Image (cartoon, rainbow, N blue to C red; front, side, top):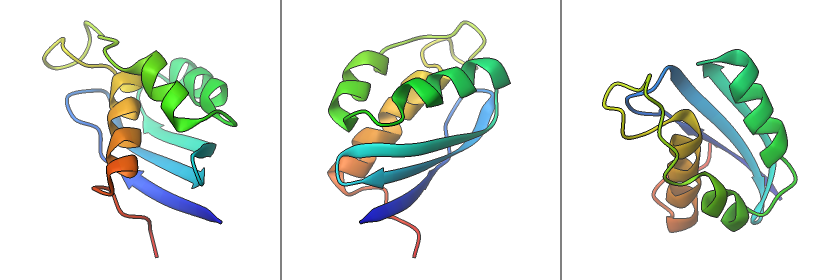
Length: 93
């Protein structure tokens, strides 16, 4: 059964990530704001993949354009997925 989650990234250009999951599979990601071409590309590459695989690939990526230089939109997506897995980010009703 599909569930939709909303995550507010920190210290990056994007403002919201809407993630649709079906079990451990990412069905769709929509990123609000940020670098449109990059976020669309990352989102499409992640769709249809296992959550754990995406976390492993994206975690730790840094962007010099982030507010602290220690994160990025892909890293924030990995953080959101980890929060979903841990039950810290609850689905929309």
